[in-house]
Length: 161
Length: 368
Image (cartoon, each protein chain N blue to C red):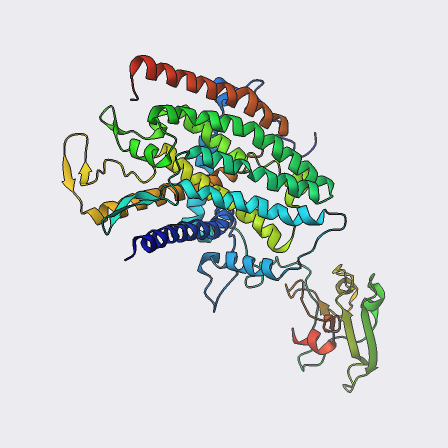
């Protein structure tokens, strides 16, 4: 049995009252007026989310825009290993590695750009990261911008979220 | 004052007042339609257009729409008949505006010793004028459909002509009972006749005298105005938008205005013919007179205001009924519309005339 199929008994013939149609119209009018009055009186009950001002709170595991994590001293946790850029199916991550000033850390990303226009929000970069430096838990989605350039997120923007 | 100047001033004032009333209502109705639709469908509806941060439940959306229509490109599609394409919206709008002339919106008032009918023109052909003029509205639709040189508008135009002609028949016949009972085709006299009492209890409104006629007329009115459930000429799921598909900017807006004016005038006509027009229940010229014999006097000015208010209230209710019906009943299939028009409405309206005639002849000689 297919999931979600519900058998509804349909009357073969309409009763006399139904075939007159007028009474049924009045019943229908009562239903619509009920909705109208309820919504007019309880404006808060309307399920519409007024989008740009109000955003839906996304579940905890929702894959939104990326952020880069920081070490306790404020430096990026990323070690520029290119694992995320390699895993990325959309090839939207560009990393340029540099030698870290911190003797305990070998490399750090001089550049870490994510082209949000190409990103498919698959989460492979998060899976691939060996040191939990990149996460997609900002809950922020569909970033609107005026130009394409603004949609290439640079390292500063990714770190501040 | 020169009597001639006075007459002209009165005529202009009447036209201006009724014009303002109908067009104001048209603007409000576009908002009511959208907001009503939204609330019936558990949505919020228009609420964005704001003037200095005041949105007023989206009341400014009609203004924004009008501005948008004014500033849009006014194009003529390739292959369209240039003359008829531009004439069609005028043909749609002009009859719609003309129909409002015969509806009385209040009782006759006496100013400076002259009796003035609160009606643009009290024609002796009355309701026949209304049918004649509103029947011309189909030309706009057919012309628009044909001259656009596109298949969907053509289909819409054909549908519209068939539908309007079919329902014009039963619309004319359904009103016949009212004309027989009140023995006049003048809307002012029909309204006056509805001020009497029926069996000494009910106001003698058309709906109580002619319940079947009322239902038939209301149905035919919806079909004439191309409103749901008879909006097949537009039928967006089948023929995109029907006859006004190729129109944009203010020409489209003229079609919309014509539709809404039809609605408003239709509502006013139903109120006048079946719900007593400006008659307020149990309100005579001097004050309230109730069936039990109880009565109390009301000043003349208050009587006038109550009566005009009663007309406006009834008109508003029937305007709202259009919206209410639209978001309740789905559109009919085309063969269902034709079957209802010819096989149900036509015989029923003939039967209504027959029964009315029998009652008038044998039970109540000379009108109830």
